[in-house]
Amino acid sequence: MKIAKVVGNVVSTIKDKEFEGYKLLIIRYLDLRGNPVGGEHIALDAADAGIGDIVLANNDGGAAAMILADKNMVADDTVCGVIDCFTVRGKTVKLK
View (cartoon, rainbow, N blue to C red):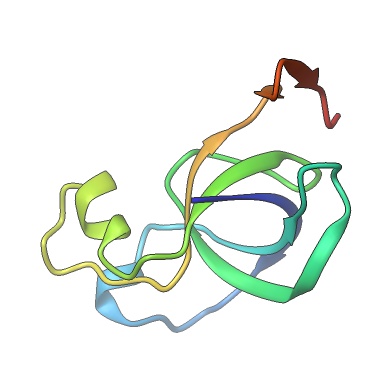
């Protein structure tokens, strides 16, 4: 799992049947200081996140199936939760 920021939405009028009813987000991974790392990714939203939210993203293809309880679902990136803060080496970091 990685920390990421939601930077946009994906609007698609036609989707694979498995993705119908699910929101797709554009995310950018962050380092532990909140700095962007790498490029942008499209992620399946399982946490009702929105633009500007700091999220916990799983980049394992099988995570979507477990989180959404749908054994046929496969997604490279899945937003699993919205982060308020986290603690590293005894220091609490608030990214909002």
